[in-house]
Image 1: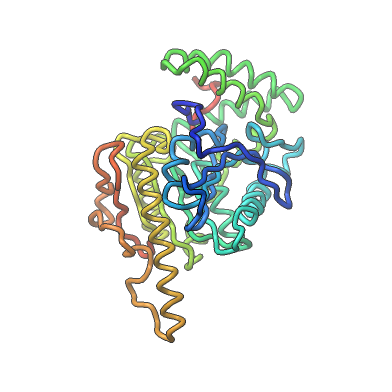
Image 2 (image 1 turned 60 degrees about the vertical axis):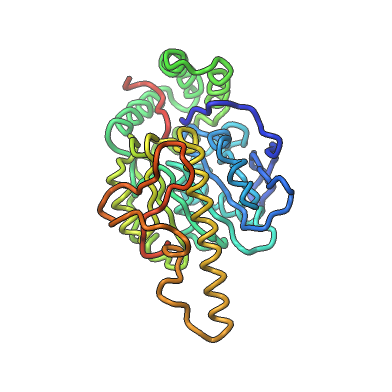
Length: 359
């Protein structure tokens, strides 16, 4: 899970419930200081064991650009109610939830910028592939092309084995035991403030045990759908990750970006949760990308209205985004951690039983 540095809500952020045709979803909503939204809204989806609070540090700077920004708890996460049946937590069902939320916040039906962190990126991808909502852009934040592997995959596999042994009726108790024996001592050793530790405990124990089980299984079995996503030609995409990401390696995410023809930003000094570890750079990179995607669409519409074809360089890849060097250089030059204005690189378009942390 991501660990927020603070739980304080800035003045322009409020707790809301987003009402959809698939139920109500707990959310944090940020609005511009003026109260006037001049740009497309954005929807932020957290990762495994995460919640809307993982985006607290970026909500206000993202909204300051003139857009409504909504971060949610997925079904069964923290303050959004779940269901007892595994069918509620399959990728298609979770993606349908995201589509419903996107439609609910897209009040003028012009499109929504969709961002998914880690597991949330895999679900956001499914929402785009469904092609049932107007998605202005897709950002994959610390998310990979397919299943989770390496050390994090090994840890998650061990956790799921414990939950299998516990059975449906004993999973909640086993999750609490894993928190008390592994995660809480680690958080204390890491110097996490007591109030944040209390929040992490509450979040984990209020999340649906069946949801954690089903989502974890999907993380370990998710197929690579990069080719299918690349075929969605009219959706600008950004692959954004920390240079020290230990879930999906930066090289893996870089290759995925190339396959997608996506923009790519590597955040210096960040790991798997750039929105927490480098919020200024993350927010700046997202704002540049989202604004460019909107500008590119306006130019395409204007060119179509005049009967002219848009130029080959009219996509978001060149719409005000600096070239960070050749795609195989590996890292976009985003400057020091926490600096404003990281520049995307050019794409074609613009303990073994411990609960896992940060997927």
